[in-house]
Amino acid sequence: FGSSVSARPLPIPVCVHPPSMASPAVNTWPEAAAGEDLQVRTEQRGGKETVVAVDGVFNYQKAEVERCLRSNGKLYTVRDGTGSDGAMVGLQWAPTKVTVENGRLTNPNLDADGFELRQFPTTVNHEEFFDEKHLFSSYFPECERLIQEATGAKVARVFDYNVRSQGGKLAQKQIKGGGMQVQPPAHIVHNDYTQTSGPARLQQLGNKPTMNDVSRRMRGEAPLLTQEEVEMGLNKRFMIINVWRSIRPEPCEVYPLALASATTLAPEDLCVFEIRYSDRVGENYFSAPNPRHRWQYFPRMTPDEAILLKQWDSAGALGGGAGNTSTFSLHSAFADPTASPEAADRQSIETRLICIFDDAPPSKL
Image (cartoon, helix red, strand yellow):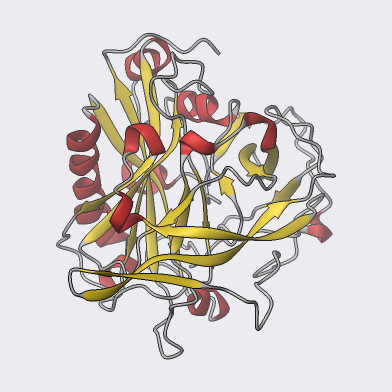
């Protein structure tokens, strides 16, 4: 549920929603009911009891919500300059209990499943993640080097990020230097890009950055991508990828990230949710429940680990490519029933990068 998933420009004049509707809601999705019967399955492995799978409750959309791969304008929110959203319009929540496997035992990979776990130590300490000076100078270059190594991309550049913490959102904590607010974990089954907003975001990054673009604070008025790089992405291959990391010193127990394997997703389950900015519209995919979805998570992640999460790949079938790799995987925060009541509040950072390749055929979209 990205903070800057900008997509197609709005027609002029811009008039997307009455200002009174942009209420400062914190959580506009249902939480898991207290006392929910959530099971934990364990096995003896290597002489110790190991969690194999847990139950979790995930916020899907009801069957009554119209499915679409291209927006019908019925589902949307309005986002302000701090990254905070107003009311969510048109959604009908379907909290659904599913099994979430321990991904440390199943070893999912980026090509097939759309996500994987990597060892990724960083030079940035806990408090520095709340200061854009350290993000821009140290952490973002680390992410760019990681993604080029992991994917073989010719170009990998950070264009957006979010820091998430339930407590931080309630306290209205801001990131130093940028004015962005800490956001809560997103308890929504979603992907951050669509058939419209993925290619549009690539093209937009070749233009002068707008008010909401992080790259404006990093690079000034210069575009993040050259026009030659944009053309290479359109004519060869481009990918949008998220580097997700828990940033507290303690292992992450509260509201960890769960991911649904791309091999189990179906286009007919998807619907487009618009994120309406003052100057453009971004799009996410939300989903209806499907018993085929295979959910996984990585229990007790440490700050030396990161999840690589595909959010769009033009080489995937939904991206218009040959389909010999995944396009994206769905993801959501969830309440892990193994979390200790004394566990620290989740604090995490997600960093989005645009990747350009020079060795793949163009998308058919």
